[in-house]
Image (cartoon, rainbow, N blue to C red; front, side, top):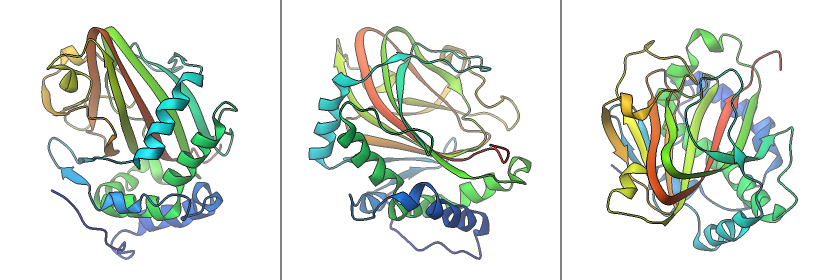
Length: 271
């Protein structure tokens, strides 16, 4: 169902409020809310609670920026994803575009990535997004992992999936990632009637503790509980939870999927 934007109840969600306060002094402090107003899009969010809380926002980016992102794609330096220490499953290639505050957008087409990054890091947008999912985020922040929260962070990736192998294995996100957004850009090539399902995000039902964060397994080994189908310029939004098992099956020769992914983090306290 579509949602409306409300102010955060700070007394009910003190951990979320603390994150947003700290975020405003970190990743959100270097942006202007007037760069690009995306907070309105949060009011169009379509939320599902099964098998876990997630949502979609269609027509997420203004068309002009969406087209600029597609035009800038050709300048990217995409490489196979490598996650040291993780049991990674997938054929994904990608490039990290922003890792606040350690890196700046790539020199090629920097203006596009700076404009996008400023918009999705803005205090106004992030506050609206976290308020929408405050109940889930608050519960996650109550885990022992966050007894010492650390500092807020922000990471933006460009992702390129293609071919007959699984694109991204079923997994839980890293425990310190609080919320993830995947922006579906486009599908190209030998697309079929099944492509929007196969190259969307598959959601799985699981019990807490049945899998560890960033421990990947084949999607084929799990029974889907739901699928967020691929649609150009659709944002898939997922507040992190220790039962939020998800993946991208892919597995079609001649099909290419392009997407952006960004996350809002609490870094480890000793970072």
